[in-house]
Length: 185
Image 1 (cartoon, rainbow, N blue to C red):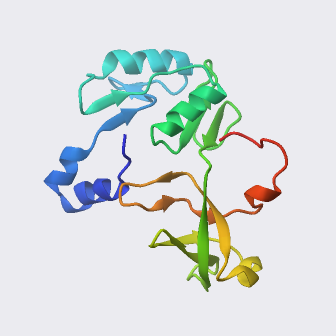
Image 2: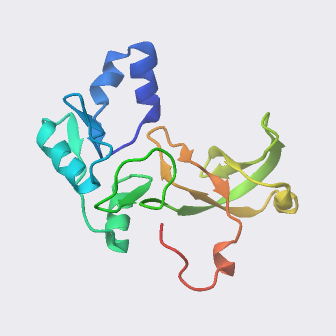
């Protein structure tokens, strides 16, 4: 599995047929089927209806539901996904954040050379870093000004097809300073 957001944009916004041919639908839930609103139904029922409604083929993939475990999360992240969503089997679909669903993000770490800090148009501070000859820009803070020219740690959720680190930001606590195994995900 390679997640390529730029291919989605090329296919959807430019009508790029080659990019469209690369796309696959990965289905996690179904909210409506044959005009019937399934949002009030329990997730386990919606999951079953999703599996029976979609034609499984090389362009359509249904994610296998499984119990929430650390190993399961790591396996999904290992496939290139940026995390997992844990759903209570009896939960109805409600938009927005809720306690019945929990998103667990992947947290990959890499050490990079901090080349400079810059201010974005949004008023936030960004670290401009070098990772094996690639320029990486990550959300940061002015507290790293004394570290310019040295190494810092970045945390990110995945690597996109074009090599971009998704949701890259400087780590608040360097690996060497952490105590214990820390949270997974």
